[in-house]
Image (cartoon, rainbow, N blue to C red; front, side, top):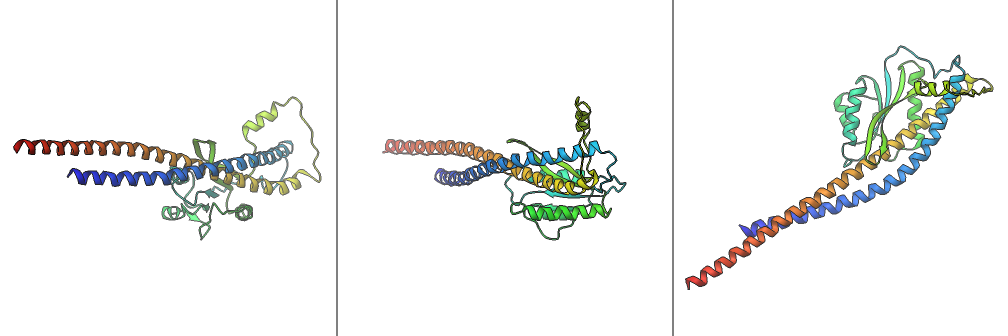
Length: 287
């Protein structure tokens, strides 16, 4: 029995060590992807913020502007772009997106789901998916995302929905990632931004040519597309960060399990040696 037990333990130790090599490799890959993705995300975030600030400035100084993208309606329906991942092994990343969507999206409202991992789960939950086929998140291009945003804007312009929004995962830091909603349309200035503008001691009068409405009608579509792209980059960065944390935890658990099994194996081996010595001594005494 001791020999069989030791053989089983040896097999388990080898299996755990092999798994540990895989998780460690995936952790290193995720860490490299996280570094690259985070650099791009932070650079694009500044550009998107500047566009938003520009739109906010124009709207705040032209309260009577009648841009089609500023219209508030009573239509409660919303079209939502949801960013998920293509692969698993990233901790609770996808589970948190699904849970957040169930809590914050009306199941009858239209959805564009980007990311193949959650496609069937959203179908099973009964969500109204506008994309009939899976859309890859890893291979998504700016042009493809722009096309999706334009379809959402078209629904808004036709008054089929009252707003356009995005469900994405906000990158807080390398250990914290939170699902969040970003409303694209209608464009509104946040209360905090209003207060900051009201506190300005030196108000600046800006002249717009040809007029504020025309500028907003041209600038807002550009702004919401880039904000959507920025949210996608933030989601992919969060995905890699979540995967890195999950794989590091798995590697650490593999180390702990391997040490525990090695200790158990050593005890079994010592017990077997002690038993053999006892049998030899007992046999020589009988002779």
